[in-house]
Length: 362
Image (tube, rainbow, N blue to C red; front, side, top):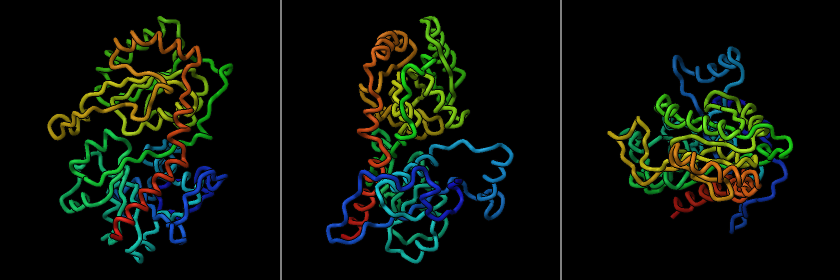
């Protein structure tokens, strides 16, 4: 399913639709029905002619095969899958309905150009993939600071809160029945080196990636490398099934779904977590200086693995990490099951949506 197309809600076409819901949100106190969510998500806007956003994915699929699933699309798909499981009804991209019902909440998950489809009269719940930073909001949309806006983690919320007072933290759930552990005896590779270094890659290849790889190989560990944006989900899933641990390299993450898929698969993670300011070069240092401390693993605890700051920190900490991997001390899937299931993510989202409407009614 290409969710960039305007589709009607069809649980059968979404992952794991409507099966064995162990959690169901309570009915409203007044005995009424649960609210139907109006979800809006589109990854692409028209580029060359009206409606070409529907045609481009089909052409690309014919030429290049099935497309890589972006983080934004994964958020949408996993939210829908979670809502199916907890029996929360929803519509998808039903613009005709929402225009006729300005009193109902519109949940705009997709890109900000969705706000330009028409003059929205509805209360809005925005995010989590609207803008990289509040300074990107155009002048004509400055009233967004009055809306509830979702971001994926606490450090991101702290960065945005001076601009968006109603910012809320919401991480999407992980498909824990798809990302499952492989028995230890079926593992054949010691380390999956996940390269998601986005900026100054050549610099970090020499300062970080290659020193880590050399140290692993000198320690007698077998290594497989995968690079962000250059694989399909099935390739990544197969790699996790082969590997006993993962080294995760990324400057920072707002949620880190790929890392959490590894944790759900029972793969302990040794993560580069350099901290410090938000250093996206599109913003830092001239446009935005947020120095509250970023994280590459905003959802992580001692059950998941360990972190390091730089190549020296990796080298000094690797032996202890690997010893714990070998001893089976880490239980990363437990963390995900406690915090990041599809059901928990969907219930959390529904609760925020209800709170928005309750605040609107005051």
